[in-house]
Amino acid sequence: MVHCSRERLDDKIKTFSKFGDTGKGGITRFSLSPEALQARGEFKKRMEAIGATVVTDDMANMYATIPGTEDLPAIAMGSHLDSVRQGGNFDGVLGVLTGMETMETIATEKIPHRHPLTTMVWTNEEGARFEPAMMSSGVICHKFDKAAMLASVAKDKPGYTFGQALTESGYIGSEANRLTADKYAAMLELHIEQGPVMDTEGYDVGVVAGVCGMINYEFTFIGQANHAGTTPMKYRKDALYAACKIIQYLHDELDKLDSALVYTTGKISAHPNIHTIIPDEVKFTLDARHYDPEVIKQVLAVIDKIPAEVERCAFSKEEAWARKSVAFAPKLVDTIEESSLELGYKTLKMFSGPGHDAQFAADILPTAMIFAPSEGGYSHCEQEFTSTEKCAKAVDVMLNAVIKLDKSLNA
Ligand SMILES: [Zn+2]
Image (cartoon, rainbow, N blue to C red; front, side, top):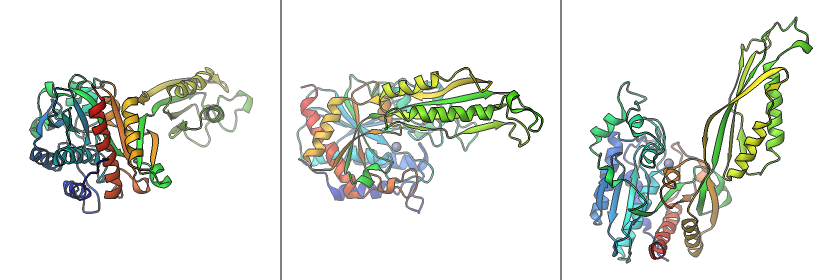
């Protein structure tokens, strides 16, 4: 088994944490901001120093590639360099540093490899200044309309579009450089867990088998507003009471499904919301998540059983949005797990709750993810932390998985 350099990785973490440093342990590094361009410059400089060729595509995603000994599609690694406001030094950037460290280890130790190796930087993963999140992977994996994305306006500067920021960045390249299945054999993204499970349970490495699917509904109950003092109970059409009955019904029925299902009613509104008036319109949301599409189907069946009339109120539902579960490529997932176990690291096979660029990439080519633990489960804040030793263990898994895949893919 090969190990990455702890010192070199530590230097990378410390260097990149300067670009957008808040002075309080974190960074603010919006996509294409001056700080983000500094980070891109450092990435390019370090990759060129090991002999990589760096190109960009039409969404300014970066690709640093070292050649292999055979004419084969490349094995790609990568993540994003942008952050949320007052974010941490690990979300996204650790995945880019992992690709860099993997390639630097292979280059300096002269480990032979048949496939070209690429480290990628995805543009605007966070969507912190220009919405939506996962914007550029969404465009190149055919989820989002490019023209609509270029028209996305900065939250802090009226009229200033993502398209303008992209042009001004100087990083627009050719559409021909996009990640595609003919030029790339696999895509691997390392990310911090952003949750408490691995740290609490003492795991070194998360082998991510997929991304949880989710559904998001808004339910509406229409009753009749009336005087609280004069309307007998039997004549009432109380929309809030109807909504309560259905919240209770959902809990009773959803609790009978798989115990890994999580669901939440996080938002509720009552109209007119006055203490002397019977509510005539109540809305609430339901967010449900599970990795198995069959369980999501069972949730939908429970929702479908709600009658059109509840306690004399009209019931209607609207799907606000949904995300399909993503299953990562089994061969890649197995190779990652095997590498982690062979390194002797405590390994957890798991699913990702949050979304990542890799889930879009999974639609166009074999893809998988590796998780490093987040100390205390903190993320998207300045307390976000993973020790260099813990980061290095996850990088070791990437390094050995890439070496194995280089032998087994296109064999
Ligand atoms: Zn991220």
